[in-house]
Amino acid sequence: MKRSRFIICFLTVLLLANTLIFADNSIAKALYDRNTELATALIVAGGDIEATYIGETPLYYAIYNEEYEFAETLLEKGCKAWKEQLSCMGTL
Image (tube, rainbow, N blue to C red):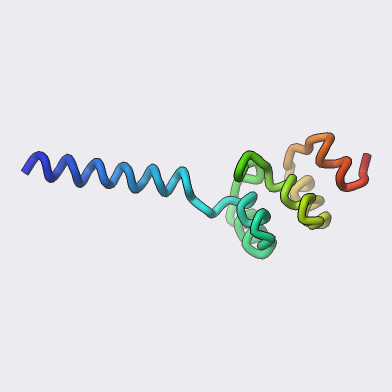
């Protein structure tokens, strides 16, 4: 009885950790996939505009995908900008 309870608790923790680590609901992931509609919905829902996906920020993916209006929106929302990212937009 104790062993099966331990296994159930262990699997629950493992599933929760997997969900948190590999969740695909980040703004950066949406922009990586070129899904600006999902990215917009995530911003409206209070998503983290600084959270990274594969080491890059939403601002990076917006600029990389030439979504300059979306990049401006991120900057207006308070997203921190790197000099290299802004130079890609031609603003420097």
